[in-house]
Length: 245
Image: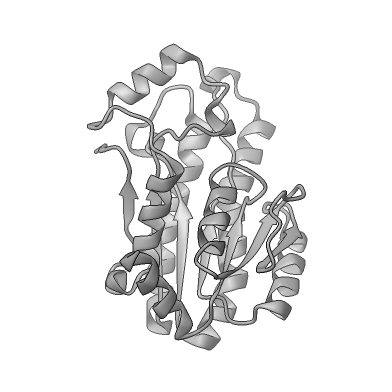
């Protein structure tokens, strides 16, 4: 509970609001509920509608890979919550396919969603954070990036790009009191991994120092740390769950 209280105190110095992408399901939805339970205001973004019903939740429809939709959705959210404390770039997609079987359009769509979407939302929300001179941006990577998993070339490339973008953004936004960090979850039992064959999943888990699935609570705990005052000197870093290197 102490961690939750510190996040709330830190947020109250600017506002109690945060923006989260990909809140219609999975980790994004779980994170939205986690922070709503802390009595924070959450603006959620997704291509589809959300099932979240809470007085402090506002939902905005947007495809994170379409610049015009991102600009419009963020503008509408800022009209209601003009000084967001944090942005969690959670929206993304994972697809498995061998290099020789991956089409150009499939590769591009993965990069557009995972990397370009992170860039677009960060740019739009960071402009508001710069005015407040405080904020946290948390991007989502994956342990597939350091493990360079075969059959996930497009996904790995897009997330490696997110990690590099995180480091660059951290340097550019540090003078404005904004930290930018990245979280690389190991497999979490959500819709994103349901189509992965069991043998492939067992092989992946075996490469982790802690050979087990993470939970959404594990992810939330790491995000809590990045959002807390105790992480104010940490920026440009990627934290992997499960123990990989």
